[in-house]
Image (tube, rainbow, N blue to C red; front, side, top):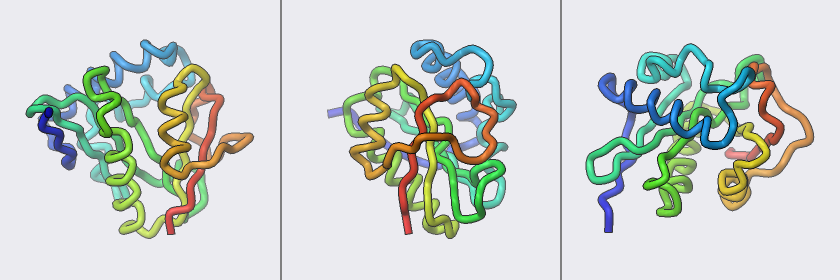
Length: 162
């Protein structure tokens, strides 16, 4: 059984997470305009998640960073809504429970920060991710919330976390 650890991001993890994001997103056709791969924070995820009411975690498998996910206020959103952000995993981290564990870790942080709802957006074709969100209590929305700038996304979910 692999040794799986979810921990807060450290400064030296930023390059690994940027590489994971830039590897995984094109796998699902999410590398054009309107996708998170182009967000400025990708280059230094540690610094980006030192903001108030934000946290980013990495998944380490046998000591190697193989994924990550974070929580932050929803840009241009309501005060009580956070966004589950930049949750991407290399193939070796998929199907072993890391996604559900990461969601729970992020939602726990969101509750501590005082959020009441958690939003996430994704796209058609990321079927396993959408199944994971539904399995973890998220409900589909018909339209996006906030102002993430990710106009390439076409699937939206929300979950009450209070």
